Amino acid sequence: MKKIEAFLMLAVMVLALAHCAGTQQSVNTSQAEKPGAIAVEVIEMTGKVKAVDTLKRTVTVTGESGRTVTLNAKNARNFDQIKVGDIVRAEYVEEVAVFVRKAGAPPEAQGAQVVALAPKGKMPAGVVAETTEIEANVEDIDYIARTVTLRGPAGGIRTIKVGPQVKNLEGVKKGDQVVLRITEAVALEVTRP
Image (cartoon, rainbow, N blue to C red):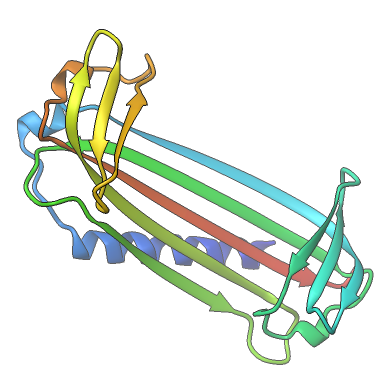
């Protein structure tokens, strides 16, 4: 499991550095007063390989809770090393950051990805981490009803309800940008019992 944690930390750090290098911005005093939030969720799973389908390249795993899932392993390196009875350990991390900034550019969507795989011939292991950033312009805002109408990068318009946990909603104005940055990372390793 230490291998997974090392891979996961490396992938998240590379994505963070790549994002910072590409989007360095100074934050002024009024920007710091805009609402924002970060939420992180980590899910860990351990299970035993119950079946390996070499033709379909799928692996059926039964978790500690008894739940059985069939995983698509079409792109897995070292697939031929996986045997019934092997232990699969996986970690899934999702971080969502939402913040508001003054308008300065049209809305856009961008992303970055990092992949690290076990060397050929070793037991399957690896990390895939991806960050996606989407910007939308505030088209309208209703402070009493706590709704914000946003125009996304493709021109679509959507009105969303803003929960009471978001403070300083009155700091958001028409024309501001809402930025949603989602980082997802999956790390897994297969070991023999």
